[in-house]
Amino acid sequence: MAFFRKKKQKEDPKNRILDVKNIRTGCRAADSDEAIMSVGHMLLDAGYIDEGYIQGMLNRDHSLTTYIGNDIAIPHGEYEVKDCVKQTGLAIQIYPEGIPWASGRVRVVIGIAATTDEHVTILQNIAEKLGDMDVVEQMVQGSPEFIHSVMTGDAA
Image (cartoon, rainbow, N blue to C red; front, side):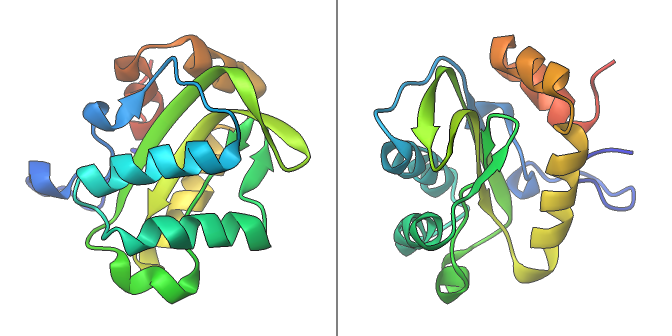
């Protein structure tokens, strides 16, 4: 089953949740706030959110960390900024050297902008796709195209 596909429909490039251009490898950041700002600006530049959502992402991580283990963080906005989401989308940044985040170290940052009804499905799919550390390691070493194939279910 594909990662974010609904019933067979003609795919509109404007409605893609994850585009290869929104995946960056070889990233560096001094701390989690810098990484959140960076991935937030990717979501903004892709047209998924209004700028206010980025502050909501920071607020959310400060009140309840978005670090989920397996070297992964999933920054997303708090409920108060849900109106800043224009359309559901993801941005992924890979930090090969890792960055400190809450009680762990993060190498995969997945910025999420989601409407209320799609949020839970996205989180479930991330957990399903990245529950195995071997897959996370392959993503950290992989190209944007490879990462996209893992996340969309097209990987062999």
